[in-house]
Image (cartoon, rainbow, N blue to C red; front, top):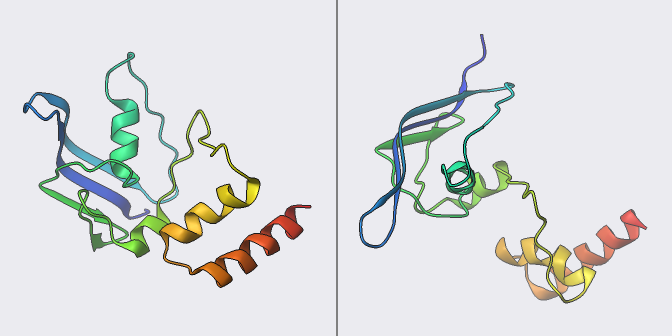
Length: 127
């Protein structure tokens, strides 16, 4: 049996006035599993996914990822590299392809010259 990859207890997301947007008692996703998330419009599916990917801060009584404690309000850099959220509508910057590729590197703290080298390598690889 595979171990839980992600566990969350008491996940909550609230509006500024305290109104609850998302309230999940317990969630566990087993390593290697496929999960389908369904619900009505406005049910909180996208909010849940953004919170789990670290794109939107949320509160949790406890959370772990790959056995490590996880702070849903402030993801550690190593966790951000391991959890990916693929948007249903891709977010592209209106600037260049290089700027879109370089964005993630900049978020990881990769400096200008090294970032430019990696961006050029990625463009050359992709053709």
